[in-house]
Image 1 (cartoon, rainbow over the protein chains, first blue to last red):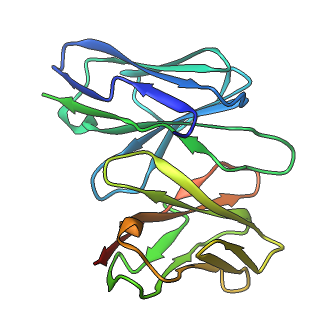
Image 2 (image 1 turned 180 degrees about the vertical axis):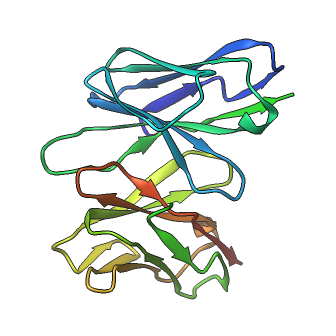
Length: 115
Length: 110
């Protein structure tokens, strides 16, 4: 257990559905991240929240909408996805300070399949 | 473009042997981190080495960093079947976030 939980662990959805992924960290960290991991591709950083403010959005399509209501919770709202969005979605958290980027703690991921 | 690139892409060894994985990167970094991922699961942080460090140890893991060559290596000594996983290096360019490489798939045969 890394102290970061994600639900659901598996999700199958049609292209017209709306669903949300949830992430919760129990580590008291001040930064949270969404990553996308597709087969045979490097991990792609999608969004970064630091102190509940979005500080990075890596040109992610608007069909992905993040939400960070507090420092412990992070959501990824999904709507009208495409089959190529099928991937493992990973949430991570870290404690950021002035010393640079520290180690990140990852959740187990949500395996998303878009039909 | 990705910052870190691991080599080899895949490695298969016998239990008890040592495994060495390499990572090369392109720009100056604040630190470099190694992570492990078991099949279809989340990543687990293994070790962080800062740009002013040359070598670090953690149990059976040894990481080296050569900033002049922009490269790092991860050595796993006396490998076990449980070490079978994908290993990723992640670099931290100054003022930026973690950038992951594509990973090395390690298989340890018992």
